[in-house]
Length: 496
Figure 1 (tube, rainbow, N blue to C red):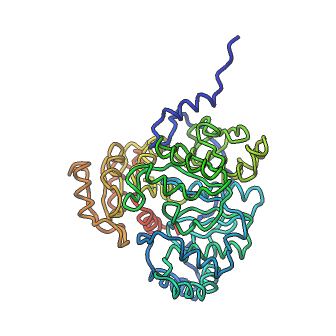
Figure 2 (figure 1 turned 180 degrees about the vertical axis):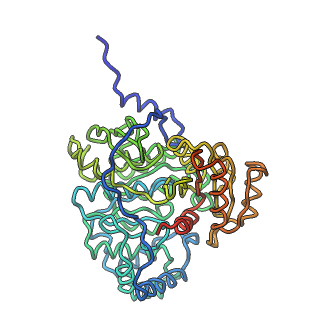
């Protein structure tokens, strides 16, 4: 009697052959229903209701804005290391999980946070950029830090920031100060574990003053090429800097050249590597109402029928990475051969939210927000929209940053956008709307491009275009191109 094929072996073969840029496994389109428990509150904080607190928060935001922005970098950890030194090394007061990669970092961080919290661990999460409020970047126990605590943390470490500023060639940057605040807030809480997302790269990122026992590498693709390199391998060299001596590395599916760089670094650091598609992965997934139903293979075994209230194959892969990360943190796979409690895992995943990642913020017509801002992210978003929503006609609203591969981004959406409304967000980094329109016309043709310089007008124009098919025709709107565009649209559409 012949042996039945192992479903996971089949997935390994599929993962090996699939397009690493998309990092998705094709799955059936059958719709299943699944319950996700009680609806969660909005994970994005609004402005403080107390006028005095709001005034104090704005004052802190103003001071932070006066520093180097996140796009101006001097590749060194000297300043943040000096700040950690005068603060008493708060980043060493708790174990950490460090996340790098090009796409999927924040969603993966949120999933890891939810899983750890479900096992009664007090968590701190540091992610960037924010969707609407700077306080989102620092989370305690799964919720953004309160505005009062954010202000207090800044005021507490401000004298030390000024001390470091005076001693260094360059002042601490916006991102470095926020990183110092996060590490201090986590130590003060105190947290049981910190989940830390790099800002950019790895080796010289401000977060790289931690010695994480688990390093996570989400899919690497081309982004920030002017700073990190022009190939996945060059970018991987910088990102591999988060791998510390003796750590466990949880690695999502990667382009071959990037994977080789990561594996070489892991060998040098005597780190243990678990690879998606080999040691863990997505066994199966099916579209479900409000998300998807997935079966994951973790480091310790199989986890069946998990409801994930997020759309797109890329989120299923993020979930597999998050699960393997938490298993590794608990010593499963290397020290223990067992699965984590199934009910706890299911409840944790069912409660996950990732604002601005294929997030539905309105119905009739349906308006979806997605923070994709590079071609790989756009391809994953387009695949998720096509699979999960089935719009009869989709209108795009795009506001991009000027330093991105805008043509590649638009080309990824061209097959699914009936028309595109190009616009501009309020950031100084925003691409001029006329420049964006010129690229869009080359990709879509003149008849499919609408230009609306103001985002509010762009949203109104897109919704009007979607409504032309009538209320029950199934048209939709996707707002994308930048986290800033998505955050501002979210506010305009009454969220936050």
